[in-house]
Length: 317
Image (cartoon, rainbow, N blue to C red):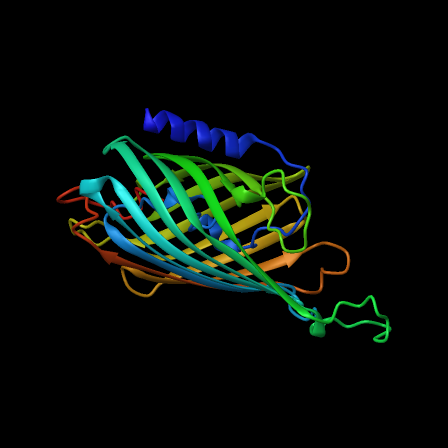
């Protein structure tokens, strides 16, 4: 009964529309590696404690352009069929600064060899500050110019569901649930709805390959994004399977942006990545964006779903 109620809540939040035009979700090119910012169900990663962080500087050379910092940690507890996580996002754009700490829970059911289904919920607060003293006005004596500092702190929540098989990932989610049907505001982070499908092939001893398509909806705005990447591996002949070496990827968005991604495995469980983002919008095509990513996995017995799993590191993508 509880599962049916949760399914209904997720479906309502993911497909209910709103006319709000407010602040957008953070933009991260490396979200194909970690979807937890917009789908809490994706933290149900088995076999290890998962640590992830990325920093993005958008439109380099443009005064007040966005700077985003994101850090996450999560662990799956097999005996509870549950994952627990924590995250913090900082997003600075011009005179505004947003802070978004969240706690995340995901429940996972599965037939270990064939599929897994997880349902997740994130809850926390969203804080945005506007510093009027940083605004540059043509006429500083204009009494209507906003020069003070104002901050709001409001509750925030995301919800999502994700289905994984050995070769496919499907997910839907909805962010900033308390913004649904709210009036437009400079402080408000608008409700977004996400849907995605990913094909992944991890069978080869030499490489992993995946392609994905994502749709993001905010009010009447729709953004489509396609991604393809290859992760090269080195065959070791050990029971643990081949070791991943590096990966290459490319993304294109209907908002006229393309991204080139590169990741390097420093060790079996430590990976660093870089993303170069190029906009083709008039006025921004000379200002690229750069993103650096750090991913670390700590093997955990509490998270393990098997005794010996050959080449199982990325069964869950």
